[in-house]
Image (cartoon, rainbow, N blue to C red; front, side):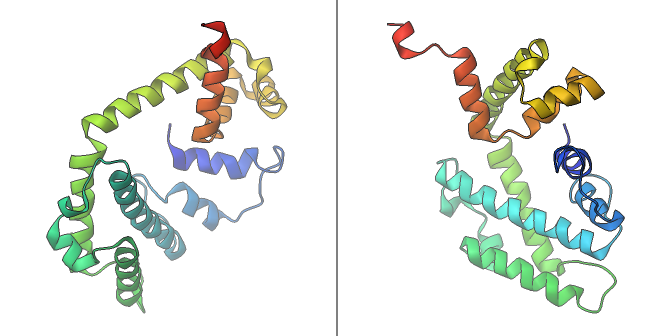
Length: 205
């Protein structure tokens, strides 16, 4: 699953009850290449790509601290000195740095100092959060939930909402179930899993 590819399918195929949105090639390119190996073809697309990196680095730090995976004092001191010691300061530093260094340039970029600090912070997150045992266990649970839902709706496609049943007729059950799961929020998926597979309290007493 590649979320940038699915995002493009959302606007091309799934929005407006299957009619899709009439977006320009440039906007679609920005959606398709806001992450991944391929680079955006426009400066606007590069702005989206940089904004995505800024957002996920900073929000993942906050999530890790709230979840007890990280303590604020564990963050690399050099990164905090360059970028700031709070969520808002780091975002402000990164955005202003991009604006200053990209003005009157044919590309969108950070200064070497801010870029290095940002990459160091990203590497720190990969080592201490993304590849942490706690994160791997959570991913295992997510995989279990999604696999169970995928198997269930693959065998019972008529139980999906009407728009996904129609996709089943047009493009096959695999595509329909993938679209259905991709459009679920975390809460919807866990609630649906509970409703389908977890016995009610009164049934197990």
